[in-house]
Length: 279
Image 1 (tube, one colour):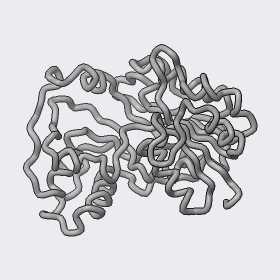
Image 2: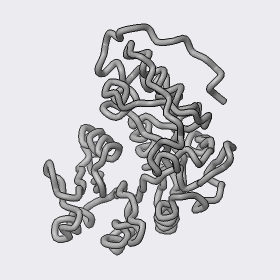
Image 3: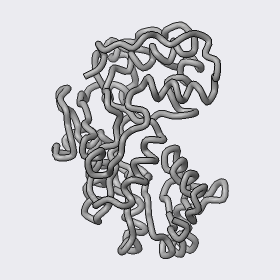
Image 4: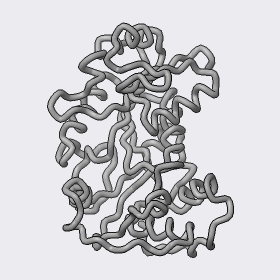
């Protein structure tokens, strides 16, 4: 792998973790940020970005689209993408509301509130990209454990079930895509559950009180929109075509792993596993 070069557009939480993993494995990795911090390339510095793009064998885009202007990578650097492995970190939000039913990659997109994301998703697919559709992302430094510790976590009166993904399973899924055919892939865990169950488990791992319930109607507009869409996301294609299996198939395994990195000796034992919040 030492001859492979990756350019990441948008060194955020997930893409940055992938970049670190590949750098440790001998890849030549470059990436952009909005302001060029920490040795990255400033996204709008074309004089620096274009040579890195020309040298790259692999390109991963993780910058969300602009509602008015569309996908910024395709708009500014789309003419330099030919002949490269292309990846795009998208969202399972492109599926919209499935009224609580299961969706896979054959389901229609663009019917929900994320029309710009759905348009960008489609544009990258037209370019022959590997489009990784992601649900709620968590991992070290960004998880329900952090929100419970900070006192910002809450439960709601909604009964929605949601898929989620540990950041390291995103990394392994993208890497599995390097030698797979282009197309859309849902990278999610195996067991969609309610956010309440996840928050309660995080509190138990920390030995802290369960956060209070807030009515959905009292949440900010964006959060209300989140609860307005109900879907369960299937990951069978990623398993079948990529040969990928999540290391953290449910939130319990994922949160235990995150907790172990910060609290080797939990304040209290985790609650017993339950099946009522799984399908």
